Image (tube, rainbow, N blue to C red):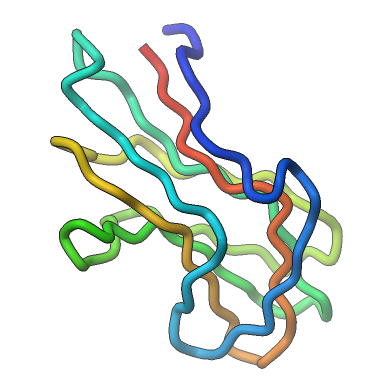
Length: 122
């Protein structure tokens, strides 16, 4: 299985911080995925490169804007104060939908995201 396509990098790799709360809040990454473009069905992963400002746990997830729900098994987390690349296992994305990245922390520290993207393998 080879890497087919990578969608959207937040801020072209320029890190931005977001002070987040216990509730997930929208970040600057908006993505669109059309499953019909990939035959046979592709493997889709959510990837984020992020860090915590204070070594406390920060999280990112993929949110389905079209369906108004978070994507199952898309949550990523780290407590690293250095940028860390994290990837989910395969996600079940179907149809044509718009997605966004959401972030949160339980400590009120800043979550910095360098990149957030869908990785499509076929």
